[in-house]
Image (cartoon, rainbow, N blue to C red; front, side, top):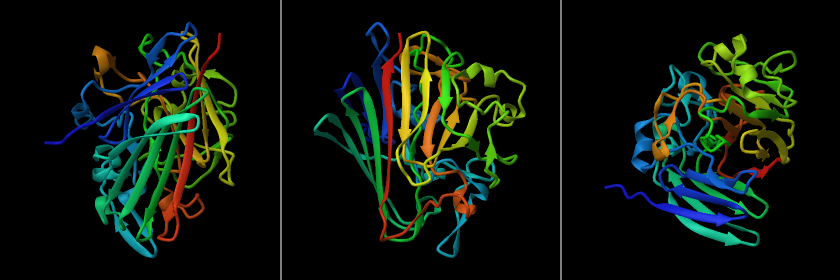
Length: 339
């Protein structure tokens, strides 16, 4: 019988509950403008419930996050087939995704932070991917209201690696049934258009003049409820990869989201080249934590990432990982309040 383990960590005005199933963030507590702490992520009361649904609430995603078109790619000159679980595409690691694995988990601490380290070795050819991939992920609650996620991975054969976290946020902590009145700003001038099966075509297009232009704060509702084909083609909302302005891999502020009802502000910093903004368009109506009912647009995701389908598009930033290299990536979510 699978043994699920839970850890709680508190520091820097934040409290987090994590689970060894899927390296998962179950709960994340942060204060509103009145100082009241509440949980701002979607999830379930029982770890086993995560295996019954396909929304990836709170999980680490790998070996490759997002979509690989045709569930196939060449690695070091040889073509590999992956598990197709999204029409003809492979999505979020296919049938051997990191969200469904049991990770080793231990508490860590250091100067200015408390956290947890997760470790997992994905075996050679799991999900169709070559190489034993050794993965380490740290969730650190840092002074100043920051959740830092640090990813590291190494391999013994050429393989693909692109990791992210799939937490769904509702900064009202469930007081609002959806996130449409949240205001968002994304610091990106370009995005990667998709084909009819939601895989990037290889084009890099400007957001200017489209509902994807979020370079100034806008209510999420204004895009979702528009008559834009960009919203209709992905289930009636946002589900788009934004091109971030950090071609040299430096940390940049990718986005910030403000909830007027609670005053909570969340800022996202990353060294990844892209970020998927997703407004929960495909959340099926279901029961979540503490009796909450989740439905379409109950939460939003800001998944920092390599660009989707980069394995098949040579001009996209590469997700190839070689045996003499280390995959390393950092994303920071900083929480605060506006009065």
